[in-house]
Structures are given as structure tokens and as C-alpha cells.
Length: 137
Image (cartoon, rainbow, N blue to C red; front, side, top):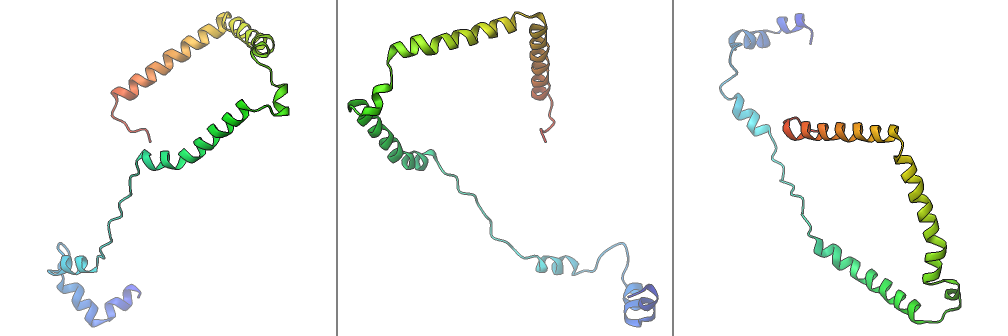
């Protein structure tokens, strides 16, 4: 309805004039509370670790069984896997080269200062988050 139509309707105009603007009707709260529908409370179920452990036990037993079979059998494709000599002669030189390159990178003053500034800034941020009451979001 438009404003003029509301003023022309006698019933509505009488209601508007009779109802004080500073307080609602006497049964206002009762009518609002009656219109509110109650909803059932949904409680999330908290699961313990026990069901997860029980569900992974068969898979862990299967993996252990397969490892036991492979370790005790003489399958032909396992003849290509080398023992301790392969690790010491082939893999350790690569690891040594990687460690030497990391040592050379951290020997630079630019990297050292960058790490120091980054660590100091991170510690200041953590102290600020610990001491302030602001939320993270």
C-alpha cells in the first residue's frame, strides 16, 4: 500500500493513532515467542582415535604380511635390489653433495642476515600474538 492508501483506510489509521510509538502492544512478546519455532539441538559426535586405529589394523597387518613374504622369499625381481653397498656407494655421495651445497649457501652473509631478520620478525610476531587478545580471524 502507498502512504495515501494507508491514510484513507479508517481501520489502519485508527490503529496507528491508538497505538503509542514508544512501546509495543501488551501481547507483542507473547505473539513473537509463539511464532518462534524450536529447533532440535544438533550435537556433533566426537569420535575417539580407537575407531580409526581399528579401521587401519587390517591394512597394517596386510602390509606387514607382504613385507614378511618379500623379505623371506627369493623372488626374481628382488635380485636387483642391492644391500648396504648400494646405499653407501650410490646414495651417500648425493647426500654429501646436497649438504655441501647447503653449507656454501649459508656461508653467504646475505643469507645469514636474511635468516636472522626473518627469525627475529617471526619471534616478534609470535610474542605480539601471544600477548594481544585479538582473534586470528
